[in-house]
Image (cartoon, rainbow, N blue to C red; front, side, top):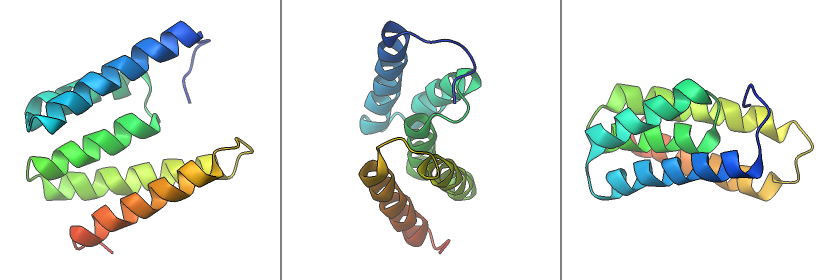
Amino acid sequence: MLKRNVTRSDLAEFDGRVGKAMDQHIRRQYDQAIEIYKQLLDEWPDHLDANYGLALSYRGAGRTAEAIDGFKKTRAFVEAEMGKATGETARFQMLLRMIDQQLSILGAR
């Protein structure tokens, strides 16, 4: 995951920025959301929510191939996290179902 020591404040700030990207997505400002997600992923490449949000924004922008790649990448990260004892099994199972649904909609499953 994140390559540096982080505090709760760091995590809250990062999650707030993920939220701003999602706000852009909800407003159908997909290009702006994509740029924010890319900046976030430069800092934390395997952040699950940012990867999933980026894939959703690619889908919203009609960038199907990039969306499929993004959902597959996110799925791999989720599977890797499931292999660790994190106590978030239910969340990971839900994310996998959501990702598989998106891939099915996009004709990739």
